[in-house]
Length: 256
Image (cartoon, rainbow, N blue to C red; front, side, top):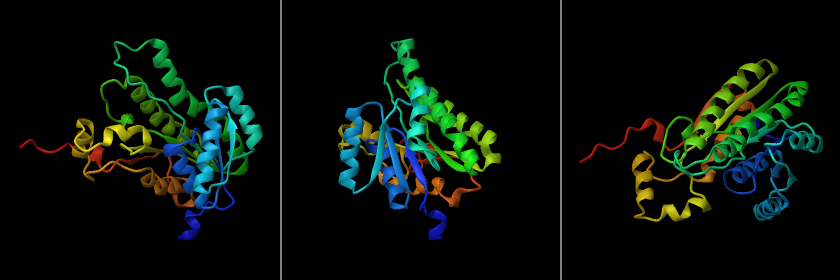
C-alpha cells in the first residue's frame, strides 16, 4: 500500500503555491517523495513562497509566471521540463454583489480561475502524453455546486472548472492522464482567521452548516491530494472530490 501512494521519482508543479492550500499540497507531495515546483505572479510573492518552504523544511523550485499568459506558461514549461503532476491551484476571489461588479472585474476572476487552469493544462499535457501518463488536479470549490451572495464570478469560474475537469478527463484519458479535482470546503487559513472567532455570525453559520461541526484545515487536504496524484487513483478520472466536512450532503438543522 505504501508504494501505490508514493510519489518518489515524480515531479509536481503546484501553481500559486506560495501559501495556504497550495503550499500544504506541495508539502504533502514533498513528504510523499516528489520533487516540488511552484510559481508566483511576481518575485515578491515568489520570495515569500521560498521563505515558507524553508520554514517547513521543504526543498522547492520556484519560478515567476502568470498562469493567464500562455507565452509565460510555455516559457515555464521549458524551464521546468516535463512534470508528472500538475495542480491548478492559483486563483482569486472578488466578493462583490453582481449589480456592483464591473465586467472587467468579472473577467479577471474568470481569467485566473478558469482560463489559467486551461492554459496550464494545455501547455503541460503534451509532455505527459509523450511520457505515457500524468495527473492533473484542479482546485475547485463548493461553489462549483452552490450559489452564494457576492461571489457570482468565482462560482461561475469554479463551476466552469468542474466541467473543464470532466471534459479534459474525456479527451486525455486514453493517454493515461487522469484529470480530477478537489473541492475544498471552508478551510481555516490566515485569511479566514478574523471570521473564525467564536461568536462571529459567519463562524457560527459555517459550524451549523457543517456536519463535522468545524472548519477544515489545510492538513485535511493533504491526503486527498496525494491520493489523486498517486497510482492509487489510476482508474479515477473526471471526479471532483469534495473535502467539505459534509456540507454538500447536509440540508441543515431543523429550526427549534
